[in-house]
Amino acid sequence: MMRVWIQLQPILAALRRHKAATALIVLQVALTLAVVSNALFVLHTRLAHLARPTGTDEANLFVIRNGWLGHDDGARVDARMRADLATLRGLPGVRDAFASEAYPLQGGGGLPVGLKREPAQTTRPRIAISYFADEHALETLGVRLVAGRNFRADEIVKAGSFDRIAPASIIITRDLANKLFTDGSPALGQTVHLDGPSVIIGIIDRLQGAYAGSSVRSIDEDTVLLPARLADPDGTVYLVRSRTGQRAAAMRASVAALLAQDRMRLIDPDEGVLTLTQARELGYTIDRGVATAMVVLSVLLLLATAGGIVGLSSFWVSQRRRQIGMRRALGATRGDILAYVRIENFLIVGAGVGLGVVLAIGANLWLMTRGELPRMPPWFALAGAMVLWLLGQLAVLGPARRAAAVAPVAAIRAD
Image (cartoon, rainbow, N blue to C red; front, side, top):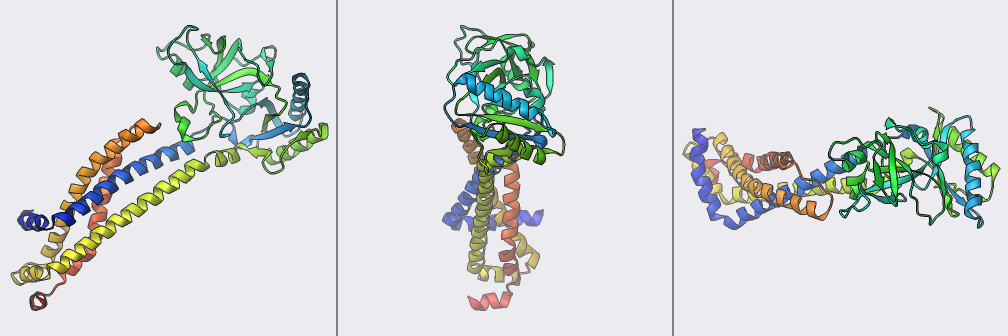
């Protein structure tokens, strides 16, 4: 420890003589820490977003995007949907099915709704994503009812494309219930207001909305099931749950049965039928791209910083050959020279890390105001600081060993 303290004075004196070069490396380390720590935090949030469960039986769930040919009215479309659902539910490999306008991880399509505690509420309503559902929806999705009951068949209404829906009863997720009733009062049996009063008759554990992107992270699981069947002349979405291990066969049988029953429909052979596993892959394309970009950006910045440290250290070693040779001639060991260069690097990186932590926290606060990125835990910046310190020591190892290998007589003669 005493030998380290003895070397600090000449190190600080040398750094003062190279203010510009030192300041550039300090600034590079600081900016690298600020960017990398926030990039890794974004990566962390995206990976957590990608891994979140939908709450459904994803392994056995698939979707059929069904378009109608012709110009039928709502009543005719509703009759065709009823017949389709009866056919699907009767197939050997199918466990249950229902019709909706959207499905989890679709990337859009879900209808945003605003829920109020009171009809005259002046504050902003709680925003949630809704699905049209019937009494078969819970079984089809495989979601768990934690309180209350399911819809009854007589509660399901037929809705047109432009109808305003004011259901007498709704089912919501537990996450939405906790946000609506922050005072701890039970949500079951409470009346909330959409376009009219609706009683919460059931609470399900979890059901992810149709919007897969990270921009709606705050309402990921704020979901409402509306007891309605949307008779849209343009088409509908059938969600089908197969029996375990029979999904592929059920998908083929479902499409064949629908076409055999009524060929006045359009089911795209490439994109008209997909599993929820495929929907997850498609829905998170942007998130995976951002995660990959964050990794590449972090690696490039770290490599650039390491290259800067190596370049500066190599330059300083070449400039100090006479000084190093004289120190060796006066009795300095190879270990002393190694320690000198590494301590110098530690101080430079340390100054950059100190400034970088401040910049990292500031950048995170700025990102919080620009999007839905949460507050970054301090350990991200601290972990980044440790990585940069380690990187600095590894980067300076080559120049330090070259400095320690300088022969005293050769260095003096070369001057």
